Amino acid sequence: DGGITQSPKYLFRKEGQNVTLSCEQNLNHDAMYWYRQDPGQGLRLIYYSQIVNDFQKGDIAEGYSVSREKKESFPLTVTSAQKNPTAFYLCASSKEGDFYEQYFGPGTRLTVT
Amino acid sequence: GNSVTQMEGPVTLSEEAFLTINCTYTATGYPSLFWYVQYPGEGLQLLLKATKADDKGSNKGFEATYRKETTSFHLEKGSVQVSDSAVYFCAPSGGSYIPTFGRGTSLIVHP
Image 1 (cartoon, each protein chain N blue to C red):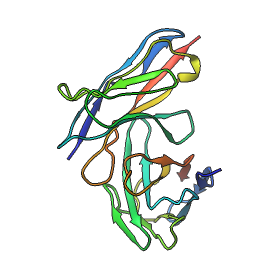
Image 2: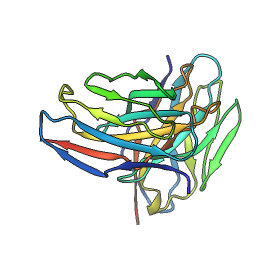
Image 3: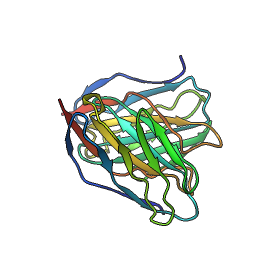
């Protein structure tokens, strides 16, 4: 079955450590996205990529980094510079010509203490 | 840029009640309109969409009509079930290839 996988489901880290969240899709979609979701808030865009080897900052990119070396993979690194990293992180993808219809992964809940 | 306003939740209903979740938007041009649903602990999934004025999107008993004159896309269901308990997001398309998500409206359905 085609879809998006995110791993792990739950992640715990100590403050000051960098952590990388995985996102893989086998939908052959060109575009991929990372969102952050906090309780009672909507989705906030961190980074997005419309093509391999290219990505753009979203609304809250500070303290995060990404890479897009392969079409099917878009990992997100939460660096120690991110002041409030504890959140639910969602990865999504969409196909060219239909960017607004997004397919989401199950999410990773990151807790930093 | 685009913006979207959803009614605040939580919306609490008894099973078989009628549901309306209001959504209004501002956008340049003629956006496509989407409703996504997020079940507890999961990612979002597309519920329905409409791409032009007066179109009605429908899925799983939910409906929403693209009202250009009132810039609205209200979500309705005639008879909700406990399994409909989730957070619902309204999302108009935008000019930058990124949808604009509303803050989400939590629906709680009691047996």
